[in-house]
Image 1 (cartoon, rainbow, N blue to C red):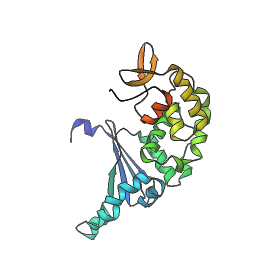
Image 2: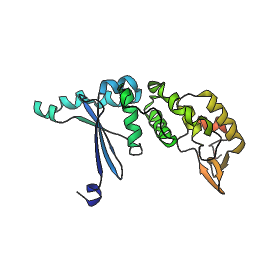
Image 3: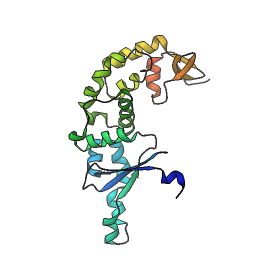
Image 4: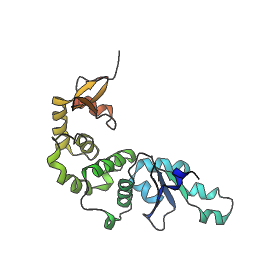
Length: 213
C-alpha cells in the first residue's frame, strides 16, 4: 500500500444496517463505504435501477464460490469520484427514509453538491420536500456574484420561479467565449456549463449554438 493510500481517511456508514450492498467512494483524501439496500435504491432512482439490474447484489451472490463467501462479502458499486462524501450520504439517507439523519439546514455549497448527485442519479423528486427547506435560506442570493450555480440547482429541483429569474439574469450578463458559457468575474470568464445540459444553456443564451459550422 502506498503512503498516499495509507493517508486516506476511512469512513463507514450503515445507511441501511441490514443492506445487501455497499456504495464505495474514493477520492484523493477519503475512502467512504456506505452500506445500503439495493431495493431502496431501485425504488428511488431509475439510474440505480438500471445499474443494478445488470449486475446487482443477487447476481453477485449467486456467482460466489461458496455459501460463506456470499455472506462474507457484499456487492460493491463505485460512486463517481467527483461526488462529495457528505452530500452523497445525505442523498442516500433520504432514499432510505432515514429522516432522523437529515440536517434541517445546509450551506449553499452543500446544496450544490446534493443537486449534482440528484441530477446524476435522477432522484431529485424522491428527496422532496427537503429540497425546498434547504433552498429557502439561500433564496436571497440568486442575483449575487458567486451564486451563479443557482441556475443548475433550480433546474434540478424544478424550482420554476428561481429558474425563470436566473435565465433572465444570465440572458443579461451571460457570455460565450471560446464556446464556453459563463460570466465575467474579475476580468476572467467563470465557466457555468460544467454541469448544465445544453438545453439549459440554449434557454439561457438563445443565440448560443454548439455547432462550429
